[in-house]
Image 1 (cartoon, rainbow, N blue to C red):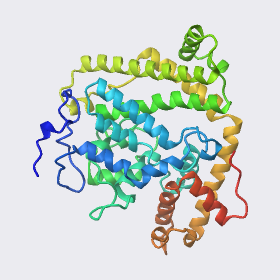
Image 2 (cartoon, rainbow, N blue to C red):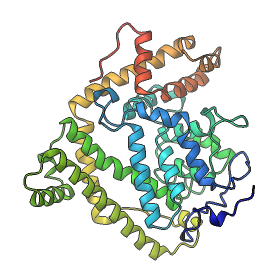
Image 3 (cartoon, rainbow, N blue to C red):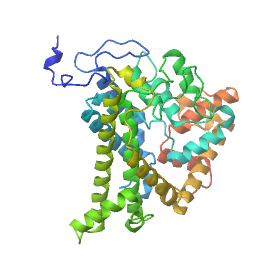
Image 4 (cartoon, helix red, strand yellow):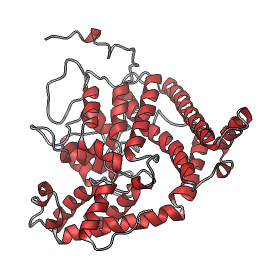
Length: 406
């Protein structure tokens, strides 16, 4: 059956010339026939949502370990919130919403059990074997570790989605290939880039930039919400933050008798709105100044186009400092982090000493008689793929005593 794309109800909206072209992607590592009913970016988004890695996010820590409460964010709920904000930004800027959503949905695939705690533990354990980076692990998952398709490993996502994933924090190298960080480009990214050049030296598409800043907006607001819900931070503590204090005054002036649970939500929604509107206005100014006529003009602009304005940048840094001091480094959170790190360390050393302890035969059978460096990489991939709940149950199976989390 033949389809008339112009009558399908999508892909016909007016997009700006600098948006990524949904029907003319730079392609996939393994060539595939196109779909008559879905753009390449829609197909990417759908593959991401149907992946095993996406489902695992529901049991991976954002700030609070899942069993500490049903209403705290997990990596999955955080990811959905990021995707919603990314789509809103892309729509306002006449960019491709499906690409922005896809990059947002895949951006946290590489996170370990117990969030940044697990990442830090694995990075230290793998110090002599290339370290650990969750963005690089995300790429490994979608290009190698997902086992779903008959003809290739991974999800075989488009160049544009993979580019947005690896450049979540901006370019990784200069034009000559030299790392822009004090550490070399992580090995999984370097190896894939040799097969499918992702322009590590340029900025990402406008859609990927929207996903990246949506991540900042989401956790800057929702980590405050979860912190208030936990009682580790209070509304009174927020009154010293320049941006938030104004929202508190506004809500209390309008609703003097408001209960705290509603007050918190009103603060959160105002914060998201203010940040989103600031980003849209700033991006419009940047687009007017740069005048990009293609997605490559965005990549080659020499600076990100989607950013906070100067004043919001200062306020956002204050929020980050506040969260780091009062939430992420709170003694109660640190106690859980120490216990979680111990679990990851114990599992790593146990599997390195005896790979037959790994329960899943697909993994266990690969690890027989491997040299240490290669074994460490497999153990890295296996542990990084665990959910919080799986890591805890695995630890209980292997050890007489497991640390209490929370």
